[in-house]
Each structure stands twice: as C-alpha cells, then as structure tokens.
Length: 95
Image 1 (cartoon, one colour):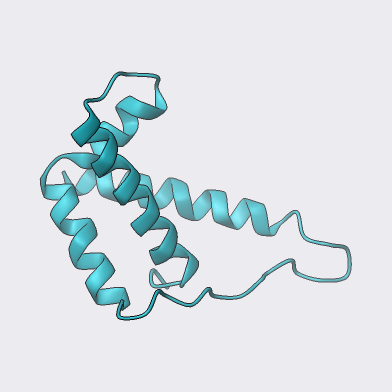
Image 2 (cartoon, rainbow, N blue to C red):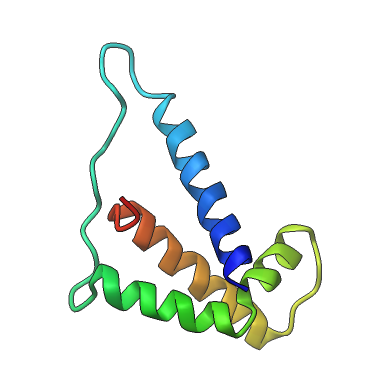
C-alpha cells in the first residue's frame, strides 16, 4: 500500500515541479510554501494520509482517475486524500 502512496506523491511532486516551469519570464514562478490550516502540522497531515493509505485509498484514487465508479464513502475518502495531499505538498512538507 505504501508503494501506491509513494507513486501518488511522486506524480504529484513531478506535476508541481512542472507547473513551476511555466512561471513568468525573469522569475522562477515559485509562489512559495502555502500555510497549513490552523491546528494542522506536516506530521498530523502525514498521519491522516497514512491512515487513508492503510484503508487502500490510493487505489481508489487511481480507480477514480481512470473513470472507475466509487461509492459515496469511497469518493469522500478520495476527496479527503487529495485535499490532504495538496496541503502536504503545498506546504512543502515533503522536502
């Protein structure tokens, strides 16, 4: 299951890196790290991502991205996972 999480993180990191390449001429296009929501930390978000990973959510993320059907509960987990991953990467917790 961690392999799936690592793959999702790796793809997200590469996507974020490529988006940085499209910045304005003369600047690096890097907006900087985004602040985490109040009460959250890199560790708390990582713990929640790990919990969702143990439930198999990365496979559900993959299924959803390939057009597969999900139950409402699975869709909720996928949305939460994606939101947490965006927060984690946006705050640069991975570096």
